[in-house]
Image (tube, rainbow, N blue to C red; front, top):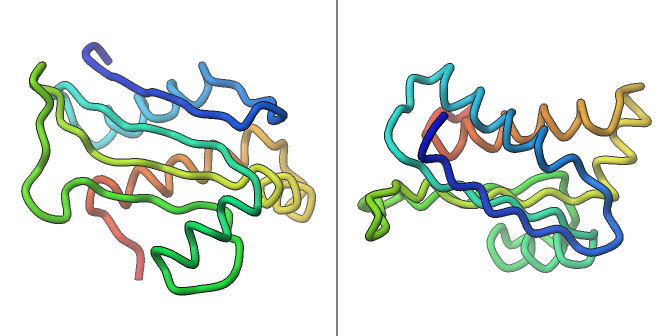
Length: 128
């Protein structure tokens, strides 16, 4: 997809496949017929940072595999370049490793699943 901006922040010790994450986001947008210029940011963090975010935004003193923060709760935010800022996806790498092991999956496959889950939230398609 053209006009797609995906800044990715990774805490230094975590090895992730940036191209695969970007491809997964692009695939989800394509499947949901999103063709306008879009920005989605991704952060891969440790449990301490995820616990802080969970406490601050969910009121829960626990870590979790993913948090997504939609920019579309109110009015959509458009950058000067006309890009729609969908929001942010934050993934806890240590939780991903544990869940991938538990589910007998590759870490990259687990990250794909979480990215898709987070993107669905950012697009307003929530689960029950």
